[in-house]
Amino acid sequence: MNEVQQVAVKYLNRNNDIEDVERFLKEGILMKDFNHNNVLSLLGVCIDDSNRVCIVLPYMALGDLKSYISNPEQELTVRKVLKYGSHVAQGMAYLASQKYVHRDLAARNCMLDESETVKVSDFGLSRDIYAREYYVLGDTKHRRLPIRWMAVESIKYNRYTTKSDVWSFGVFLWELLTRGELPYSNINNMYIPRYLENGHRLPQPPSANNEIYQLMMKCWHGDASNRPTFDILSKELQAVLKKCDNMSDGDENDYLYPIQTI
Image (cartoon, rainbow, N blue to C red; front, side):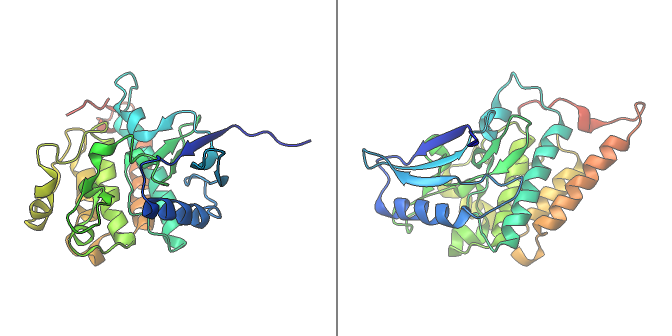
């Protein structure tokens, strides 16, 4: 008896140029062999009768993480979103072990299944839905870039490594703890490179204690070699979650507080 699986089909926007299509297909081919519980698997890439490029993915019942955490009807505690962060750190550690550099890690590029397991995705699925979160730099041949999530060396030298993904992970944690606020929301895209080069970083969210904010700051170290690995980030987040679970009912446990938007 053949197994039936519910799937989602995503189409590449007709307005994408040939470079976007090539990148889309190359990433699809590369990611088809990934096998990890926190990485979204790819079931297939095809062209339909209208010559539209589409990809076939497992159906994610709760949608993308950005929309989920931004929904005011969802009650989110610090512990819950740090669990999401732990899922993503584990998925990114796996991708790093496969020598894969993501280059666009953000809440919009993570998906939630029916059990609230977070899976790292990409495939450029969110570039049209969240267009305002991408910016065209003058020397990128009009390719839109997620500049608010990018490391200094990626913006300045077009250099992408696992450690630039770690920088993006720090911004991702900030998103989780602000329920999807736009990073540097009061700063124009064009001024962000100078802002970062001058040593400025995202402020500490009210819901993040000093321990968690220091973890973010480690991700944003100006010297990429001094940033933690995803294996270390995963272990540190799991340690925080374990500490939270071991607290007694009488302890002051700010990890269980509901997160408010900033």
